[in-house]
Picture 1 (cartoon, rainbow, N blue to C red):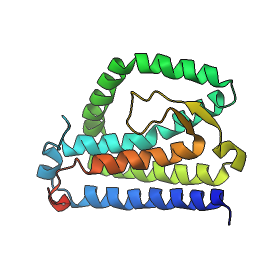
Picture 2 (cartoon, one colour):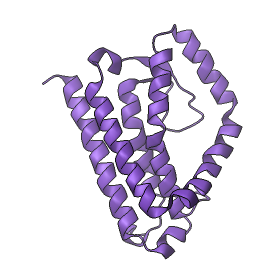
Picture 3 (tube, rainbow, N blue to C red):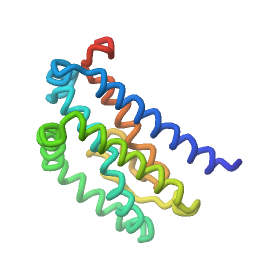
Length: 179
């Protein structure tokens, strides 16, 4: 088995672990748990759970951008990443406000359904990726997220949302999380 196949299976395993964990967190949480503030953010647990879901939702448009910029000269994506880094303050505002509304609109049940759909979609996309495409790369705005590296590949993008998920999971203050 090649390294690419091993990496692909590892990504599938990570996605399934996140799906299982997300549902356990969502299903075991009481309404009081969901309204409780998180540790280290301005969100409630419910809002942070939506933000964790949103990390997976963003992969589809990020994959599209990478497919475009990954085929252009490196300097083009470097300039684009610099432009995005310059817009970090507006991004941070949108990044904060999105989960406020998202958690309210989606609610617990729909959030779980959407999480399943997004994970299933990522599994299907990953299965159809050509080996050469997994290595396409572009520059990323490193000021936007601690898990964005200066240059990321399509393979890296599939791993990003679970890194983001695991980081934020530690900030939840749900009763079963031992906080």
